[in-house]
Image (cartoon, rainbow, N blue to C red):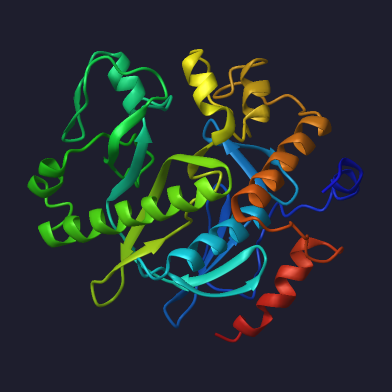
Length: 324
């Protein structure tokens, strides 16, 4: 989408997805959820951008891009792992099976990268070599490819607490998962990541790492939930420049969507101070990166749905679910 067209859509955003006709509303930071009596869940991806435990702004098309990117990957991986998807009544909406989310979050990593306290690069630079039940060799450099992809599980903090690194032994000792569940989940995660890396390579990209969320259905089957291989849940690098930048000790080229977060952090204490007004140019630049990411990852052209208010379109498309 060219800059002029994007600017024309600057006010075409989905900030709030409250729909009174749907039951059991729960609003997360980014998604609005409705649990239906038939055991399904309506998940509406808004355009809210969350960071520092608060909503900073809305980014045009963000919810649509994330939903459609996840849709692409759910369809490309359903032969590897069952997923929660039942239907897509709207570009911003997925209707899925309601699951009991497992208390372990799975990140698969193919490179020594990351910035959070639980990332393997942070732990490695602090001197650790044993982490997540894996031993990494000495002498590795930032953003270097690992000998083989590894699973780095963390405890899932449902109460707003911080995630903590886990080893497979700790997962079983704490009875967070059964041995059979851990074996199945590990198999799914590594298979999904291998498919993601192979398909990303065909698009000139490196899938460096990604997060998966799994749950169980009423029969105890492990099901892939949430989103998969989106620019929010995954780290993508541009393959063409990776080797040269790695050799020079430079960060790989990526879909850098953190314009807004970096701008805010440079101007205030984002956890405690009022958020300053964010320039429209910055928001539109972020929207452009999301769209570029969608088109590069999927190989599809992004075509926004309709021209009217997004919430009106979503409500109309979800009307068949009102009686449920």
